[in-house]
Image 1 (tube, rainbow, N blue to C red):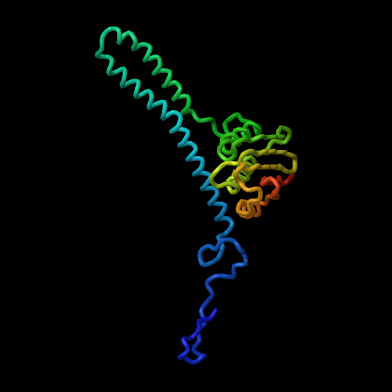
Image 2 (cartoon, helix red, strand yellow):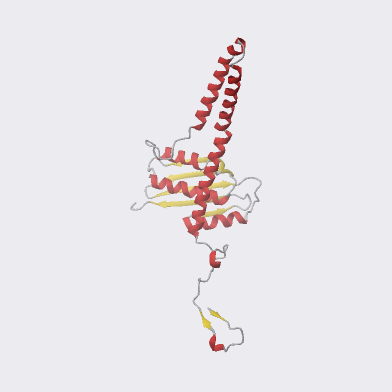
Length: 249
């Protein structure tokens, strides 16, 4: 790389400076210094976005559920406190009000109890997978999730389950970073030498049948993880196949 003179100096004074960055053959969105970001950065971004989505989901669940119940309980308690100074007839009704308040408190307490984690003690592979799909995908990344788990004969390890769940999460997050898909079908088949993940997704009805932006988001993630990705232009759906080889098998 060279710097040109201003025209008043002889050509021999042209200075050579070191090149700062290599050429960027990748046509993806430019990053710092004009080069596209490394695929690993994209993956890290998706992982953080997934964590943020889970946090928002939990916040909304607490706000729309238990917090509403607690607010109602506080209002009821304020009403009971005002009536304590009333006549005997009012006091006779307070027992029923207290029962209602207790019911509200019980409902709020139950709503605050989060489901157990994925790798709970005593869970087998099927139970861990089911818990992970319920907690991390169903309702959070897709509205409806159907599953077919064939993992009983050669159950995947905790590490393998983590990889399968992360693969499905990252693909669904890349497919729709903000909303949720309409319907997904997920299958896991475990064999002695490998574990296979099959994922088919139908986006929501308002999305265009052939979404080039969605395909562009999915492709780098699929290539980085090693996923075989297919798009159906007629329906807007897509499918992914992922094989996790078992070392030493």
